[in-house]
Length: 602
Image 1: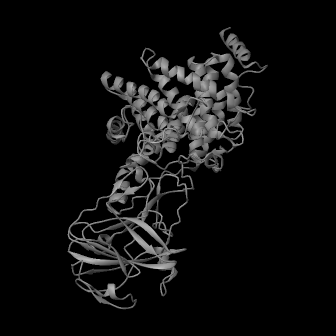
Image 2: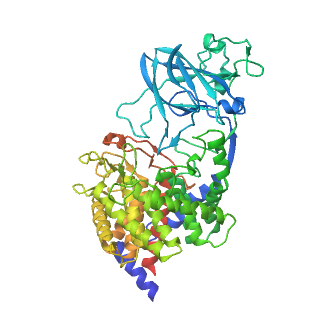
Image 3: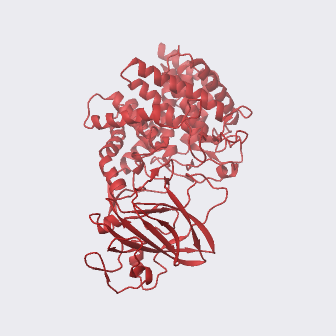
């Protein structure tokens, strides 16, 4: 009798002559299992050996590792040569860092010089490597000869150069970068140029001011007297690197970043819900792959100076995208499993992440909410509601003391409220993608997935925060305000558009999936009125499910983006199949819709 009453209630709530499940060709959980099955079929969880990727443009960090080629056991000097090719005469700014003395010439003109014993002072910022010095290159139209002279007096010997970084920000005017390498150099075979953009020669006797033959002439097929033997021009020693397998423009499902961590988290939960171990195993394999690989990644970054190599941001990042958010499946596993092979490695890593969550991440002055240095200091991104707050909620439930738990719950709750002070657009009743603290009057567009990150964080907090917490009712009120605003923009097919309040922007899956998920949670937990919101949830899920193929391919997912004031930047963003920004949101949506249906039918 209870089952019959439950089904009748569901039919009434859906205002339909069919049950909650029968309006679809399959249950939501079966739909998203196809995504999980595709991940299982296609993910390798292994490194492959590759040559370093060919550098064709001087648009990123470059290193000449003299020490790796010549050793660091004796004081010496050496030279490196390349060419920069540009479309016009220009002054091009460059950042530089190095050990000890260094000189750099452009077309025979000395443009940079620093003498004396010195340590390398490179620091990883949110989206760039920051350096201690800078200079300007007077480039002429066509090819330009670049000669570097470097000395070693201690135990390190490298020169790093990098074009000016905007810390990952989208430029208002696109910058043109020089081509770099040896392809325009006469008498150098293209196969050599493919291996390295640099030629090097050395080591020579020490003395940064002592003029040697490579400064006077540039000739091949000639030997010069070096420090201990005759030397000639060659390429730097090339190290083989480990790379992820099957990388596409937006990455693979197991690179270290927040959306791939989200995939692993969703697979762990999918395994729990379906009682099918293969999904949980996939999520745990993601975690083991990264935790067991820490020494290898550290070797590539610090020993081989491959700062942008595969999964490098699993260590030393200062961006929530690569710290707290991808750690969600790690801490979730610690919460759920008492004993497994790598538990101690997980614990050490998560202890560091929780310390970072509490004290390391930059926050808005005078408030608790997380913020960024991109594109300027104290820029508040709505993305960071998801990048940081769900981790705080997991950490609170993992905490081994009541005091620690309460601190983390309080932090998460207060951050929700503080984010609203910056990125909630009261006029539109939607969230702006970001907020510039120095220009509070600037309103950025209401990008769909960014709004999704906000409601995801709110629903995570409401799910676990004690109902007697002093901030619970305020967060619930904002959640309801936001949900009731969102329903205005759901289109006739059940989608939300990529820019929510711009119907001329395309319908998009990831934002639609997150909104559907968060509303399904709201119905199940009693935050939202069933009669009104069940049809909205079902309509949203029907839209999402329509973009999932039989083989698990997911369509219409917007690629990631930096923030911009230009709404057309969002309207014209490319869409991809199986971009994990969307696939993990879709898995979560399917699970939450299934949970809602199950709760109504009980």
